[in-house]
Amino acid sequence: MTAQSTDRLIDVLSATAAPVRPLRSPMRRALMTLALLAALGVGAILLLPGSNPLATRGARGQARAGMELAAMLATGVLAVIAAFHLSIPGRSRHWLALPLLPFAAWLILSGVGCYRDFIRNNSAEPELGQSADCLIFILGASLLFGAPLLWRLSRAAPIDPLPVAALGGLGAAALAALLLKFFHPLTVTFLDLAVHLLGLAIVIGLTALLRRRILRSA
Image 1 (spheres, rainbow, N blue to C red):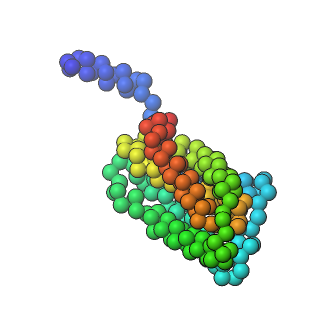
Image 2: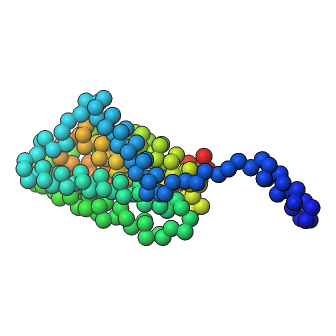
Image 3: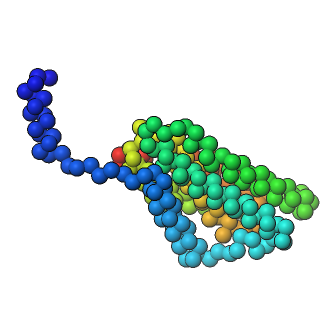
């Protein structure tokens, strides 16, 4: 490129280029998005017939169920926060580990509840139909939470979209599973837990597979 063509290009860009509005900090954008997702979740609980996720348990069961709900919420919130930080180039991959501890706590607490229910019901056979309904709910609620979340993440046009999409999928699916507790407050069986994990895997897999399409620059 000659000096004359370079000068012409500079003149054209300076005359036509629109000013770029810098993005807010990733933490601020994450908190704003979480506030939006919280509003969607509360709206769904108020508009649809639901129930108290702790109502059918005794005092000891309520404590464990409360910790399980807290672990699910922490998984979703921390996954969203990590996704926004990793959408910025140069951020440490250590952000990927942020939601792992609450996710492990969620699985352990759910597993303990499943085992106690299995013993209490004398190895009763679970109902596949109800678990299938849970899967449909998780997928639908993940779309409710995931659509605005992924759109917000796409504003940063991440250079490496895979970890961003995976964390976004985990965040949306975890919040969807949390919302399910307000419509399916019964004790989770091993089959229910397996179906819930399948729902998480489907959501994370789809967001990872479609990462370049859903996270391209808005």
